[in-house]
Image (cartoon, rainbow, N blue to C red; front, side):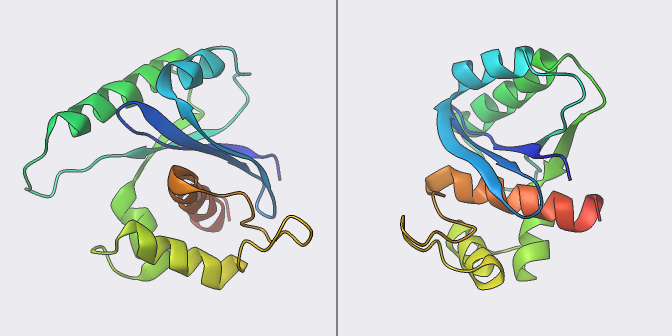
Length: 150
């Protein structure tokens, strides 16, 4: 399977993972302007999946709106091609934990249960190298490969 790029967007930095269904090829948290530049020069045949924010009737602050703005910029930078897809966070949480109320730590725990512990440098596991927002990008990537690309 050709690797996909999964993005866990944030107001200033985003978690990014490339995943081929068996191996993480890249995982990092990068400034949004750097990601924007990289998306603009990517091949149109690449597949990019970005977490989308949904409203559940709760109040939100400026960071949520800043994140939404960045998501739109990422989509535009990729050229508006059909290979940029938005994925609802709720769908990812439900798939991995069975609960929409799950927190990031719950999703991380479910991923470790499914794919194994990160391991060590000498004996790395599938999730080795994932940190902070890259765990959520990995959750998105695995959801896409397990559900959408199955």
